Length: 88
Image (cartoon, rainbow, N blue to C red; front, side, top):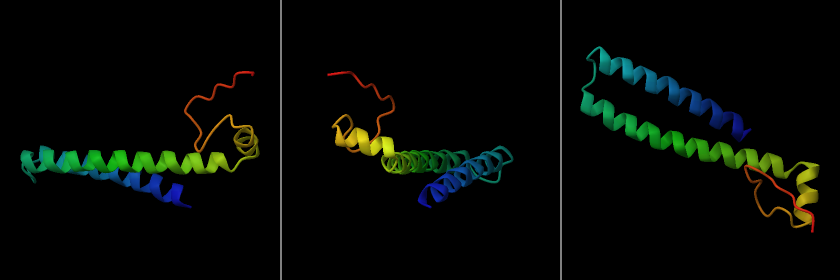
């Protein structure tokens, strides 16, 4: 399942960020290198977060209630963070 892979990757990224932080603190890497790598890790984390959200939406869209809401045009192509259903 893609979701499991993405969540594992995000956890691995968190471990990596901890390791580079420690490496900088003990002097194994220069602070400039640390900042550069940390910025890239932040970007990758955001991308993984978006992929995780996308996979969650796909899973939610394949539930019976989602099919019903889609057929009633209450939701479009993705589940919003907050679903408010107002009577017509």
